[in-house]
Length: 288
Image: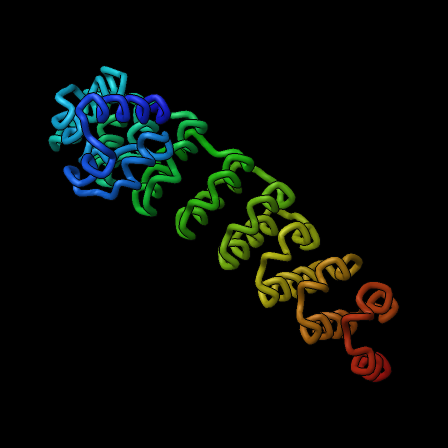
């Protein structure tokens, strides 16, 4: 990464050598003096469009300002509208804060063409500076290396719903458990969570394993999955674990269907009595 403190001190030194105040330099660049102050204190970096202007005002090269010949060449190319050809992953991390999204995208695509590989640490240093579209493309390309749950959780706050849902789907296909995916559940849409739950159930797990992600699911979807599971297995032994995330009327209906199909009312009482209309169930029971 660029050393912003070092660059800031260099800008301050060159400004003073040029006999300019922060206000005078700001006026020549068409920016606020606060921006110049932030550069010199190492809080921010000059935008790429301002670096050639700074070099011209100070009568120096961009390499002298940035302190790195290689990175200065990359910035110079971008500043004049050219796409750098010899770019490494760490270079992308350096330029991300100071280039436009389009400039970054062009540079990244060229680097990918040249066989560049990026580790997750470098990716995380870049994501705060990118818009949704560019970040989405970057994540899709990086996905070929595979994300761990921990990595997905780290990057999730920066992703839009579409990209995040796609990432979640790819992680589930790699054999993670419902408990594993629970860490990512707060970031995933209810629709995608329900689809993931269906995938897990199709693999033969108990519906009651969904307790790990139930707080983030739609209650109606949970009820449908539970109703289907109970109808197929006759198992309501752990219904109380999901009941807090379901509508009471849905629980009562599931319990009623269970009794209609030969289940014992005692099983319902021991499992979900606080959540159901017991009067309705007793009426049903005595009709039998």
